[in-house]
Image (cartoon, rainbow, N blue to C red; front, side, top):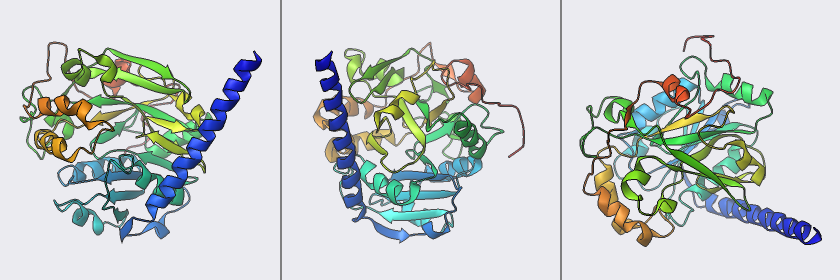
Length: 349
């Protein structure tokens, strides 16, 4: 028993130092960010903030910004990693956006988390903060009638520090380079299908981070070794406090208690879904580019076959695919939960 207590104490000590290391790393990385439009002085104490990195996302930006503004995000803090398609120009003049340029390696910045960690440390403390990728659109029970202010008020009332979400891969009926609708259509019209399951969750020590796997990428690309399939659980919405830090993208956090707040599909607590638009047609060119840039995995060689397969624009649709209808459908399928969050129509947005 004494040995067990010593092991637990040593693990907690190491995690505290890991957390401090990551926070200081983020602060140092923040010094390398060049402001292109800094409007953070306008942020109010009760504003809900969104943090993201981007590179060549001009196609996604209009729907992304419209979606999160409709949910109630009041200020966007975005790091542009050397876009060449005009993405920065699209955002620079928007009054609710603060924009920075990062010229360094995305991979060396812990896939952008050092840059965002610096901004969360500077501007996020005390705020509800959404940290998402440009290809992720958050939905949650009742989101068509209840905004983020109501959602976060509910989380505060139950003393929840964060809300988890499943990253749900969307895909077209045919090959990945042929969406089901035109470029101007909504993401869920271009990529209308998803896998309703199976998904599985396990807990990893010592951080207690969850590892949810499954879905079409595992089915199509990692069937021979499911352990290598992408992680699908995230903690995108957090009431940020001093000492918090993301460890692996938004999949896990420190301190470890934050990872206990979401167990993946089937968790009865209030949760959401990130509609994941990875498989728009540009995925074919981006996968070819990734074979050279090697920026999106800690061990790029281990995932070279995955990227090569994507360059062939495979078909992910199969007989078990489900057509997306609305957030209520995802709740009915058990992919997210309302808990006891009231989702009645209390106002129209």
